[in-house]
Length: 134
Length: 408
Image (cartoon, each protein chain N blue to C red):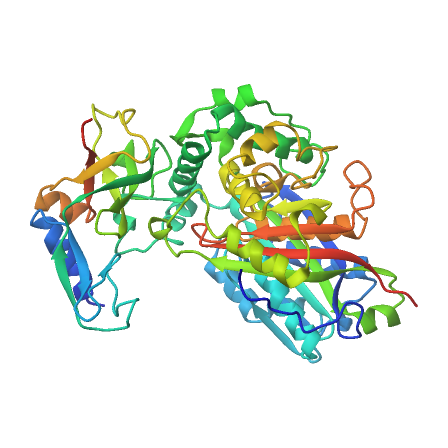
């Protein structure tokens, strides 16, 4: 099956260094994850907006062993859930403050989107965030 | 307040569905114990416990397994009907599936079938072979269940990462210490030490041992992660009139249930330290007229300590933020004020995938039937809260069960 358009367009945004949030052109609400119809009003008239890329870290973890197949070489890595200021949330990778060190991170930290290379997005098509320094 | 939904079946009425028997075999690593062999064994045990034989059964309901799609297909396509020799008479055989909350939903389905008259005697069967399956294959499979492939799989998320995020948020929100989180696992182990069928029977565990075990997914240590296990269990339900006719004097009925599906993938959960429990509990109290103080035991899904602590708070057994400290105070222990997960739970009896919730349900029924081994039987056990959760803790499901005297 061909990759759905909402997936390829979201990933193209990441490759171009942008975090896109789906926007319903009928009710004006943002949707994350992107949907095939707006979960608020069921409209299929959907577009994208650029996220400000800033939000709050709801929670995170540092995975040290037991990676899924194909992720072994990434260990250790940190995954977080970010609540964007636009009012939607997503799962992301977190940049360590020092090599393999996420000890500065805490729940409810303010975090920001970090553009990464198109090669990196090709390999891991997900958003990366980092802690905003105090 | 949520709308009150009345159960359309009166306590003690002829069509009131009741649990009349359970069966279980040891949980752990049993590579030489076959899948169908184990299912056959627990079916016979549960039928004997109910005073029945296979031909009494008109409906078989299957709990899924996660170790093998081929084995699952065997269940879906009625293999157990033939294995039990009831092909030609059995009316219906099928599977119910919502991951870790399957047992709760299977009870709702069976309850409805019996009350409405679609079924009379239902046998519910579960078997999982996680303990003998290829570990890497299972980890990879569990990075796809409850995780959207196009959006979240690329982060490298898997089940321990999900448990770790919920644990961290819970610790942040409640101010619970690593010692308090570890104490939940110790309570479960104390119960497992009274359960000969538990994977960790006669293997005591301390907070110090847990905190000294290696870090797997911060803040989770390896001893705080559920051990994948082989296991199988079964239970039998019928209607009250039939139970009486069969001379059964004590059974277990459903007083009510409540549920809430709060998300599909964890990233969309609004508050990982709350989940769907408060609304599920409100619905369950509304339907039953019970409150959290009415239960004698609780059997609540415990694949990670935080998951159970959060459930306890949402249900109202522990005050907000006090779930882990409730365990640390020993309230859920043998002899405590509300015995919790009296088989040792998923963390100490063993995580049998979808079956972990079923094992807790079966233990609740067993306690209410007063058929647990004497060393862990809770005295005069009349009412139980059963709780389940599936996928990435997508739902909170509560069943309220009570012992009932059937009379002549």
